[in-house]
Length: 408
Image (cartoon, rainbow, N blue to C red):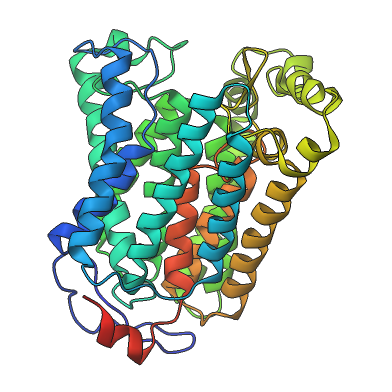
């Protein structure tokens, strides 16, 4: 991704110079983290990869991330950060409760993985808050690569790529449609905001629109589309007064939405329903039944407060599909308080940050993750959502003179 750094002036961001190339070790460390949280499902692929090998590849990439992070930051420089302090508290308590879980091995492994994930984030804190948004650029590079594999897989084997109920999934790497849509919405939304601010070129934005938009429609995931639209509205509102392009696009976009809703209302409604009845849609595809079972399950008081240890986010063999319900099951009310706290902290940091692309992108990511957390899991465990929120946190930290001196 080619971006232009911007001058930090309230209400105006003027391109100044092209940023330095991404450091190879830093990009490698972030890419290893990204690969570590990449889902491995049992969907058909072009080249069949055994589940054991696939999971071993993703999990071992965390070790590679630690090695590369130590290589790029050999002195172990770490900047104090409240967001990571809260994540560290969550990881420590999760490890303590997982040791006493009936599924000791799996639960403890997940807790140790979360601890290693947070440790790598600590090692990368010297690059937080930089005006060239280096970690955001690393994240976008990973999004481009993973979505390119989805498109290539669909071109090579369309039957396997659309084998999940006609929804686009990964045919080279078995990613489920929900995660494919998540990556597409992140690439499309972030690139749109950067283009509105004049940070990226129109050709790059058009490429992201073509790639992310086609993948998002093919994945047919309602949560990702709704979260992306709401996130774009909030991010656009933060830029509305300072950017004429944002005002023009907002007016044009609003008129287009009203026109499309008027002309194609039946088709849009049918597409969003995905063949479900009104009752099935109101129950969120049966999710609410599982949520009720989790809250109705009798547990000791200590487990209600601190959870039962990290699980595979399922209950009685059924996926929970809600961050808040899964957090209550795994980490209890303590986990819910911690997750709510760092979300509120990020929102307060965004509210007090100077108007510009960093703030707008961070707002988009935070709002997206908040909406997606209703029907997706991941804010309390090593996941793409937690990695996205980390990117938002890196954009809202202010770079200090001392931090610039100690950057390896």
